[in-house]
Length: 130
Image (cartoon, rainbow, N blue to C red; front, side, top):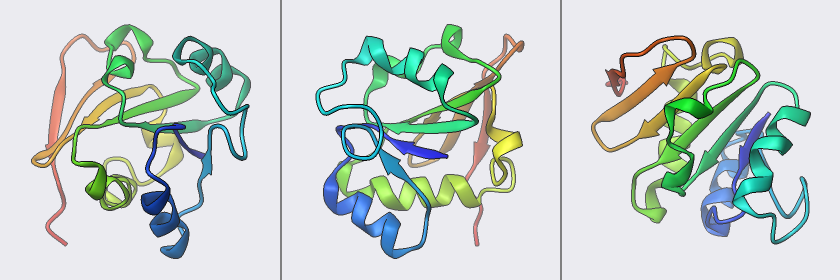
């Protein structure tokens, strides 16, 4: 499941739906409106194989890596959120749910910087050119 944080811009969520990217949003389809940051990690543990997309840098911590979810911090302008989510989901390194589990990632303009569960070094991959 692709899960959008409550603060994900509505117009960008609508773009993802138009592009047929399956996603649900906290406060709308999942959990309640006003869900606090400290409630999100327990929520992810209850859900199965979820990738959380957020504009909140607080979720970009190596210690949060877990085998049952992926955390993706969108370090881009809010207007580029949907495009960045789509690029990430299409990237050869992250294009399957199994490839994303255990990842804590920063999605930026130049590519993806990420920690993998049980790895100490931060890794980086550029965006696909296609």
